[in-house]
Image (cartoon, rainbow, N blue to C red; front, side):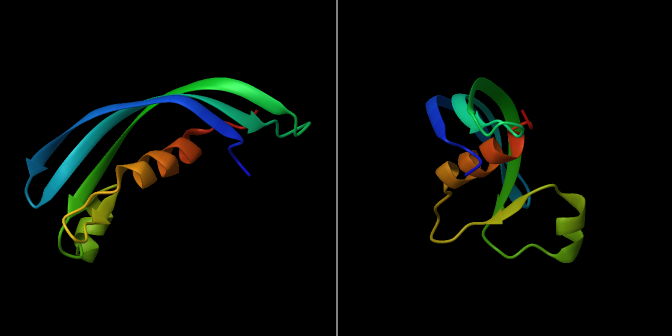
Length: 96
């Protein structure tokens, strides 16, 4: 409901090992259509934003959770970047 359409989504980024995590830094660009908060009519906009996530094979401690913005627990040696991009795209949307 927050995002009516997303096209031309491009993601670039890097992973690096920063003990005890694997950290990913990403840049996302996308053309999106969102409902206006006033009229609810579709509004087209271009989004460009960066986000960083830390990944760990073990559950993070409370201290680590307090120190880091985002820690995602990896299961089956797989990092789901699509979910990360979708979540951060929704978080980056302004009220229009």
